[in-house]
Length: 144
Image 1 (cartoon, rainbow, N blue to C red):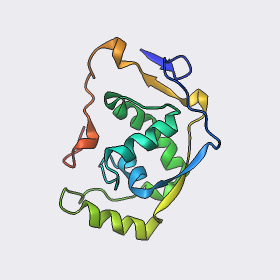
Image 2: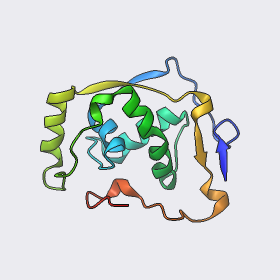
Image 3: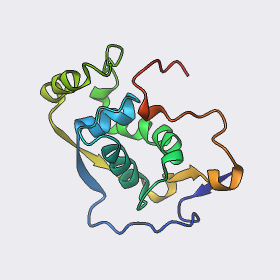
Image 4: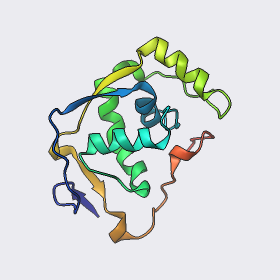
């Protein structure tokens, strides 16, 4: 079951600007599905909450929100489409992130989704996460 975010029982955040600068690690955590944000999951929550226009997505909603936001992030920053995530692991992610900072800059502007594009599933009403996994906690294989 899908709901437009306007009909979802969340408070839509009032923003002064539909754009905000985010650390490249926050952005790449979403686009690569590897948690490489210097702020950890707080960075992932922050960027997805901003893009979806909500105060706080629940942890089980992050994969769905990420699925929805990735195309918009890559549209805004097409240079990130070819970022190689194949060698990221728990031991080298910080060094890898530093390389990305040098290549793309520490922060990039991110535009929030328009109201009509803010659609998320209401898992509270449909039960469990179906076949979705919580991808942000793993640096392993993303073959799903």
